[in-house]
Length: 457
Image (cartoon, rainbow, N blue to C red; front, top):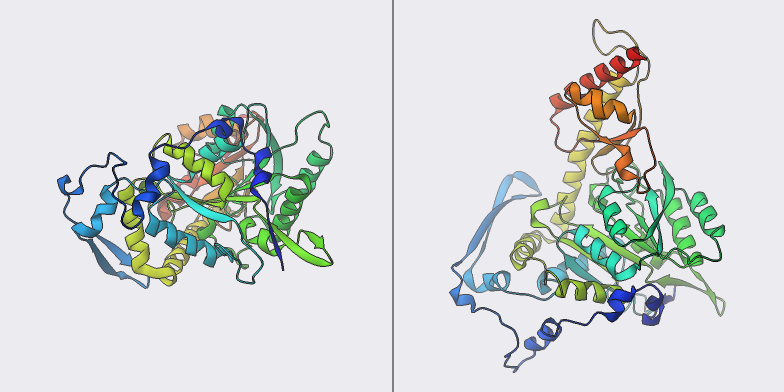
């Protein structure tokens, strides 16, 4: 199928006034020229590597094929230098190359010319200090004060202050177990006041959504992408739980993958795809280490160029050393072992989910949990996640904020995930760090709390 890549001019409508006026870093914009053969650089104030006290770095990691096996990776002094020095704003070149190939494998995309000969796909990768850093800079690059953006509701609480600081209007789009309700989104867009500027962006976490735990169905994703093309907005696909999917069905395709495979229209009797409408965010926090603080954005070059400019004018780059450590581990594994590692992690969280849901059913789902108890009926409702580490339970905010704490159990009230101050009886329960015996005790305490509150009424 032929591909139409959205041209650079397309993004002028979406870029914020601030980044349109932003000037490249006078030093960092010239970094790539230092690598040209024969060039003697008098450019940057880089310290001499021989003055650094570090002579080598070694670390030990489990082998994904057998967790009882460990591999020690040693980085000698001559190979350690890139990790001790300033590097390119977009990321350490070796890691960028590895991650770019990972995106090609994971999402069926091609960096450069499409494998079918259908034209340039127009995307690239940039590294960030966690995906949160990249989301914040993308918001700065795309949002003007007064703009309207679409956010799934409930929404990841970490982006609410980011968007609030942009002084934009957050339009909440309801979700259910299958993801964003496309019918609700369509109603919002079709009834949008003609006197107001239309929404520029849609923010979503499509796998193991924080907080609801939902994973958007393939059909919903296709419907949302179709609406994005029809009503001309960009999809911000925040996907930290992509590799933590453990649902029974095949993993639904990402928005980044779907924009290449879903037809957009016909021209001269031939169906074509349109690419360049999805800006995707991934993270190594859940699969390697949260402390590494490495995320990566994948999407239109025209947007990521502006994101890199914001980085160059603020924190300069992601830590070269953490990027080097991540690259050496990933490179030693290769893609086969990386995917095996992520499947092992997904299986780990599935087992955690199963234990949590079993105890939830036992203590709060109706029936007699243990001798001496009586059947109080179903005390709470919940959504069973297919990815990630969160349950979304229908409960009482007051119960959680007062009585539950008194009984020694803590969860997060759902109101913190609603950007416009609406109320909800749901709470988010995270099971990622709990031991099995802690889950049982937590559910026992929550049952006690619910019954106490019920008897007070």
